Amino acid sequence: MHKVWIEVALNGAWSRKLQPRIPDTVEATIADGIACARAGAAIVHTHAYENGRHTFDWQVYARIIEGIRAEIDVPVYPSYPASEPGMTAAQRFAHVEALVERGLLEFAVVDPGSVNFTTAITTAEAKPAFTYLNPEAHVRHALAFAAKHGLPPAFAIYEPGFTRAGAALARAVGGKTPIYRFMFSQSFAFGFPPRPYALAAHVALLRELDASAPWMIAGLSVDVRPLIAETVTRGGHVRVGLEDAPLGTQTGNVAWVEEAVRLVRENGGEPATAADVRAALK
Image (cartoon, rainbow, N blue to C red):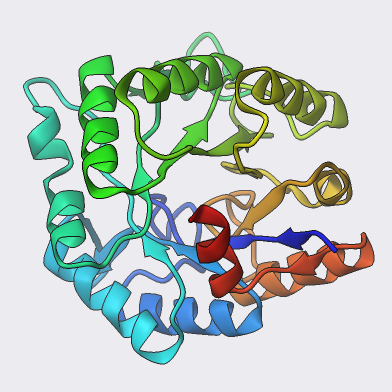
């Protein structure tokens, strides 16, 4: 039986204005992470908030990771800031490196490309969309750091070209096989909508480049549940949670995880444990 990794993305950088049920304190994030892990999530992804404010302070992240793992030992991994003018790769990933030095991370998160967050219903009068920049120098820095510490890179694949670039850079730098997260969206116009043809295209491309690489469905402002059955059949994994869910949803993180568990089992899979994930990544 296929062991399906269920990852929960607890919050993202949306703020409660856009996603009202996100945990946005250290205590709430710890509590939500523990509850989701007990509900069946084998991996927890989180942004750090302290008193409602988004932060990349490694000490805040450490409190969250240690707080979750003190109750249930699952891999927990952070986000990192968008590139800004004048920001070096070392500055951008400093909190990640501090967490690795303290033995708190099991993945090295890095997104291998840049993308515009154009909305699917934009207008001529709309303010130009945010551009999420990932210069290649930053991607190479993160991959080299991952290789140095023996960590698998965790890619977010917003466009199919991210898979090609990520695979090429990972081969060039060396190290462990990356994890590929295929990022779908309904509200944003990057990549693909959550359709079977889109999943088939992502999987076919990855199989050409690295047939052994683990992959999962994920996204931003999207409901990936219609793709779970095919994902299980094709041997993939699943990410859900309030970072990924349609903006404004009233469904909390635990309910998203419970629904993913149900759908995985209904379609012939079995939710993986944290031990299963760690064993697979060895």
